[in-house]
Image (cartoon, rainbow, N blue to C red; front, side):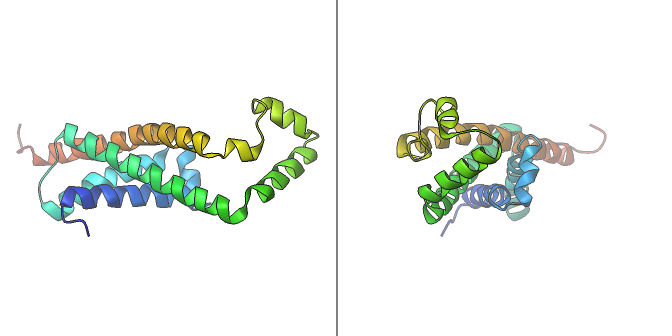
Length: 163
Protein backbone atom coordinates (compact mmCIF):
# COMPACT_ATOMS: atom_id res chain seq x y z
CA UNK A 1 0.00 0.00 0.00
CA UNK A 2 2.64 2.56 1.07
CA UNK A 3 5.82 2.24 -0.97
CA UNK A 4 7.85 5.08 0.56
CA UNK A 5 9.66 4.15 3.78
CA UNK A 6 9.04 7.60 5.30
CA UNK A 7 5.32 7.23 4.71
CA UNK A 8 5.37 3.78 6.29
CA UNK A 9 7.26 5.14 9.29
CA UNK A 10 4.80 8.03 9.71
CA UNK A 11 1.79 5.70 9.49
CA UNK A 12 3.46 3.28 11.92
CA UNK A 13 4.12 6.06 14.44
CA UNK A 14 0.59 7.40 13.98
CA UNK A 15 -0.95 3.98 14.55
CA UNK A 16 1.22 3.47 17.62
CA UNK A 17 0.20 6.85 19.05
CA UNK A 18 -3.47 6.23 18.27
CA UNK A 19 -3.30 2.74 19.76
CA UNK A 20 -1.84 4.10 22.96
CA UNK A 21 -4.47 6.83 23.19
CA UNK A 22 -7.61 4.75 22.54
CA UNK A 23 -7.11 1.72 24.79
CA UNK A 24 -8.48 2.53 28.25
CA UNK A 25 -5.69 1.46 30.61
CA UNK A 26 -2.78 2.13 28.25
CA UNK A 27 -4.11 5.62 27.46
CA UNK A 28 -3.27 6.73 30.99
CA UNK A 29 0.34 7.11 29.79
CA UNK A 30 -0.86 10.24 27.98
CA UNK A 31 -1.44 11.86 31.39
CA UNK A 32 2.34 12.27 31.56
CA UNK A 33 2.76 15.14 29.08
CA UNK A 34 1.17 13.19 26.21
CA UNK A 35 3.90 10.56 26.50
CA UNK A 36 2.06 8.23 24.13
CA UNK A 37 2.51 10.72 21.31
CA UNK A 38 6.13 11.35 22.25
CA UNK A 39 6.65 7.57 22.05
CA UNK A 40 4.92 7.51 18.66
CA UNK A 41 7.23 10.22 17.28
CA UNK A 42 10.26 8.47 18.74
CA UNK A 43 9.36 5.16 17.12
CA UNK A 44 8.57 6.85 13.81
CA UNK A 45 12.21 7.86 13.47
CA UNK A 46 13.37 4.52 14.90
CA UNK A 47 11.24 2.63 12.34
CA UNK A 48 12.62 4.74 9.51
CA UNK A 49 16.24 4.13 10.54
CA UNK A 50 15.65 0.42 11.15
CA UNK A 51 14.13 -0.14 7.68
CA UNK A 52 16.20 2.26 5.57
CA UNK A 53 19.58 2.12 7.28
CA UNK A 54 19.95 5.90 7.04
CA UNK A 55 19.71 8.50 9.75
CA UNK A 56 17.29 11.42 9.73
CA UNK A 57 18.57 14.89 10.52
CA UNK A 58 17.09 16.70 13.48
CA UNK A 59 14.74 18.72 11.27
CA UNK A 60 13.66 15.64 9.32
CA UNK A 61 13.04 13.80 12.59
CA UNK A 62 10.96 16.73 13.83
CA UNK A 63 8.89 16.75 10.64
CA UNK A 64 8.39 12.97 10.70
CA UNK A 65 7.32 13.17 14.35
CA UNK A 66 4.95 16.05 13.64
CA UNK A 67 3.29 14.20 10.77
CA UNK A 68 2.97 10.97 12.77
CA UNK A 69 1.36 12.92 15.62
CA UNK A 70 -1.16 14.45 13.24
CA UNK A 71 -1.92 11.04 11.72
CA UNK A 72 -2.24 9.48 15.18
CA UNK A 73 -4.51 12.25 16.38
CA UNK A 74 -6.81 11.89 13.39
CA UNK A 75 -6.95 8.08 13.70
CA UNK A 76 -7.73 8.44 17.41
CA UNK A 77 -10.44 11.03 16.73
CA UNK A 78 -12.08 8.86 14.07
CA UNK A 79 -12.05 5.86 16.40
CA UNK A 80 -13.51 7.88 19.28
CA UNK A 81 -16.25 9.30 17.07
CA UNK A 82 -17.06 5.79 15.82
CA UNK A 83 -17.41 4.57 19.42
CA UNK A 84 -19.53 7.62 20.26
CA UNK A 85 -21.84 6.84 17.33
CA UNK A 86 -22.11 3.23 18.50
CA UNK A 87 -22.95 4.28 22.06
CA UNK A 88 -25.22 7.11 20.96
CA UNK A 89 -25.59 10.67 22.14
CA UNK A 90 -28.72 9.84 24.16
CA UNK A 91 -26.77 7.32 26.23
CA UNK A 92 -24.00 9.86 26.69
CA UNK A 93 -26.54 12.46 27.80
CA UNK A 94 -28.03 10.00 30.33
CA UNK A 95 -24.58 9.11 31.70
CA UNK A 96 -23.67 12.79 32.09
CA UNK A 97 -26.95 13.51 33.87
CA UNK A 98 -26.62 10.52 36.23
CA UNK A 99 -23.02 11.47 37.07
CA UNK A 100 -24.05 15.07 37.69
CA UNK A 101 -26.89 13.91 39.95
CA UNK A 102 -24.42 11.82 41.96
CA UNK A 103 -22.37 14.96 42.57
CA UNK A 104 -25.41 17.09 43.42
CA UNK A 105 -25.49 19.06 40.17
CA UNK A 106 -28.38 19.48 37.76
CA UNK A 107 -28.70 19.86 33.99
CA UNK A 108 -28.76 23.66 34.09
CA UNK A 109 -25.37 23.64 35.86
CA UNK A 110 -23.91 21.59 33.02
CA UNK A 111 -25.40 23.77 30.32
CA UNK A 112 -24.19 26.96 31.97
CA UNK A 113 -20.66 25.56 32.32
CA UNK A 114 -20.73 24.36 28.69
CA UNK A 115 -21.86 27.73 27.37
CA UNK A 116 -25.51 26.68 27.17
CA UNK A 117 -24.81 23.77 24.81
CA UNK A 118 -26.25 20.27 25.21
CA UNK A 119 -23.97 17.24 24.68
CA UNK A 120 -25.58 16.66 21.27
CA UNK A 121 -24.60 20.20 20.23
CA UNK A 122 -21.09 19.85 21.64
CA UNK A 123 -20.47 16.70 19.59
CA UNK A 124 -21.76 18.23 16.36
CA UNK A 125 -19.56 18.44 13.26
CA UNK A 126 -18.19 22.00 13.69
CA UNK A 127 -17.09 21.36 17.27
CA UNK A 128 -15.56 18.00 16.39
CA UNK A 129 -13.70 19.63 13.49
CA UNK A 130 -12.33 22.37 15.75
CA UNK A 131 -11.32 19.79 18.36
CA UNK A 132 -9.70 17.64 15.66
CA UNK A 133 -7.60 20.51 14.35
CA UNK A 134 -6.50 21.64 17.81
CA UNK A 135 -5.70 18.13 19.03
CA UNK A 136 -3.75 17.41 15.83
CA UNK A 137 -1.59 20.46 16.42
CA UNK A 138 -1.05 19.73 20.11
CA UNK A 139 -0.38 16.01 19.69
CA UNK A 140 1.72 16.71 16.61
CA UNK A 141 3.92 19.01 18.69
CA UNK A 142 4.44 16.34 21.36
CA UNK A 143 5.14 13.72 18.71
CA UNK A 144 7.63 16.11 17.12
CA UNK A 145 9.53 16.16 20.42
CA UNK A 146 9.79 12.37 20.31
CA UNK A 147 11.03 12.46 16.72
CA UNK A 148 13.64 15.05 17.63
CA UNK A 149 14.84 13.01 20.61
CA UNK A 150 15.39 9.91 18.46
CA UNK A 151 16.99 11.90 15.62
CA UNK A 152 19.40 13.49 18.12
CA UNK A 153 20.30 10.04 19.47
CA UNK A 154 20.91 8.80 15.92
CA UNK A 155 23.06 11.85 15.17
CA UNK A 156 25.24 11.02 18.18
CA UNK A 157 25.57 7.40 17.01
CA UNK A 158 26.47 8.43 13.46
CA UNK A 159 29.25 10.73 14.62
CA UNK A 160 32.70 9.05 14.48
CA UNK A 161 34.36 8.31 17.82
CA UNK A 162 36.60 11.07 19.12
CA UNK A 163 34.67 13.93 17.49
